[in-house]
Length: 393
Image (cartoon, rainbow, N blue to C red):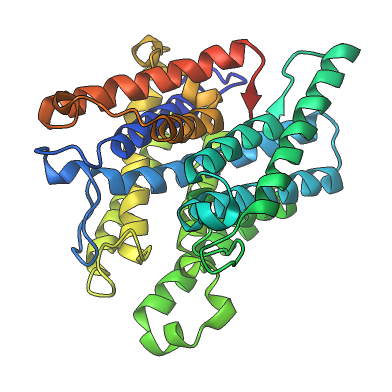
């Protein structure tokens, strides 16, 4: 069984879109009463993985899968390694900075900063969207001017909001835990740099991948090393980088065996089984904990990602069926925008004092609200994209 190679891999877009849809859904249900606990996050120390706990690792995996395609595309356009390196560093810095801004929202003191917390957050997200907006197909002089004006307006707004930020004790922004986007940024940096340096020498990529897995497991399996790691601990002892690297090497398999579907499925299936078994064998060392990015959580996530890829690949790349995902598809290409829009909405309604009726905040009513909300946010990201508001990670 084989299929012709095409330029764009629809499976990756759809998997990314479904993950974003799931992310919006699980982020909208906290506070909804009388719903199954497994829809949310496992409690700290519970040694388990619930539905919400799989969203972040899947997103990291799909980010990793996109790295070779994005960087190779830049090479085909004639960009130099230095230009691509600059792009990687700018993207990483942007994600880290936005992540820091997001995690500091709750620390802002309205009395000291002189601005409502929700207004500050709403304007911050507006600034991010304006500064990251790309012009799409607007290649005219006027289009370029509008793009630059929009970008620098967003940058100026973010600088202003950063300048006025103050905590209750008069302090300023602090990294805290980098935020989701910051964690994605650091993991992306590791994989993107590795691909840029060794894209034509796969043996080095596999060596780094195995090294990251062992490095992560070592500091969890040897408590003394874990406590003495210091700055060498990286972030979560390299666990997030393992996830993006696993996605990146999955795309390497696609590039090498794309027309050999059975071989791809065999590799992904067997690799998934090995990671699944390893996750449960290593469970005594830290358990399955998302908050601590334990090896068992990372490896179980990789297994789920690989096994999820197989049926989606079969449907989209082998059978050519993509209409089943049409409601969520805009999030596959406008992922960053779809990620930001819900937070923009939350801070707006909190600022205006809008609340949902009781029947939309419990049981099936709350779940239905979250489902409809996720579809609307994704469709809105697609609509804004048609109007020229596009963001790229």
